[in-house]
Amino acid sequence: MKFKTSLMAVIALGVMAIAGQASAGPSCGMNTGQAATGKPIVIGGIYGNGAPGDWSSSTDSAAAYFACVNANGGINGRPIEYHVENDEWNPEAAARAAAKLVNDDKAVALVGNGSFIEMAVNAKTYADAGIMSMASACAISECFESSNIVSTNQGPLPSNLGAAQYAQEELGAKNVACIGLNIPDNGIWSCQAVIDFMTKRGGTGSMAMLNPGAPDVNSALLEAVSSGADTILMNLPAGLALAVLKAAQEQDLRDAYNWIAPTPLYDLSVPAAIGDYWNGKVYVNAELAPISVNGPDAQNWIAVLDAFGKPDDPRDTFGQAGYLSAEFFVKAALAMNPEDLDDRAKVTEAIKGIVGYRSDLMCGPYYVGDADFHMPNHAGYMVQIIDGGFKIVRDCYEFDSDYFNRHIELEKKLGLR
Image 1 (spheres, rainbow, N blue to C red):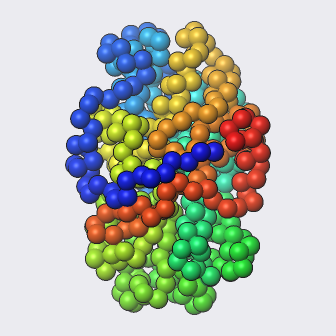
Image 2: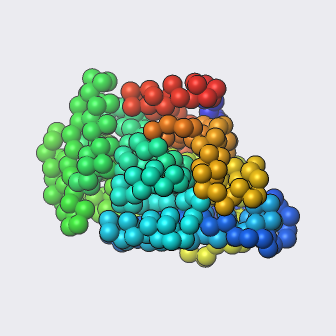
Image 3: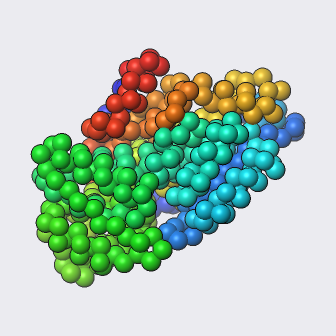
């Protein structure tokens, strides 16, 4: 893959400043300027909102993009009817949401999904129904090791590896303590990958797991500190990562460790939330391009949200990913016969046929393919929280792990390497 280099280094401060960069109107789909009036195409989406957080930004951005497409000719005249469900981080609710969208609403695809729960519950459902989920905020292994789910975001395993790799190469990390959620296909899965990475490079690692139902960050931090680590990896949703940093500040632990995190901590609200105490001390892996990169898709995403989203729609990585999933779906759908868009099997075939879609928001090409695993996004950026914002300290780089060997082989077969 060819990666982008020599990018702008400092994140613009504040959502209003970012929104102001999008002076032109958004570009969506056919760009006809005329509303689509044909037969609707039903698309579904599932997000999680509850403990441990609200991940609706992925479906919010997808919904805004679809609304923009519908205002600009739809899919060759046919509007998208986007049905969105909240799984409430509950397995039973997740199963009901998928059953409603797949069986009752007859969705031909799912786009923008983001949850800890629903992919684990519904991966088999999607495979059995022959429907593809073009997800945007995956956080568990099933999302990346299933035939009918593909995501524009990386998930915790690559993003944690990227953070650990930077810490090992640039910060001198030799012993990483990974604080995660005690969910086998989330925290344990991704923290173990970091331990394996550190061991491969002559270091070591450990994991301290939080109960997702009643997280005790103080106990987890104490366990991480007692492991002998020199680096603390906060493999957590933003709210819990901030709680870890608050607990560490109360104990004045800032200078005793390297502090790193995966992409959930890349949020424009975070620098103000952590305060001056942590200035320059926290490093975050960004799965998609930091907003300061400001390429065409980055600008268009903001323009779409400004014109078709809600004022409080987050400008975060999962929002970028939701926009991208929707944009890539529309691109594939526009290449189809409009009459085939009611045929789930044909829509699935078109999605699996995606190869080499590019965006300034991603370091490499997006692809799907007909495989039992999908992880097109396994390269990213590293940013430092400093002076009230984010500074890019490493441009696009691939993450070093044997986990990606099969993905690289697939990319070679598809002509992407």
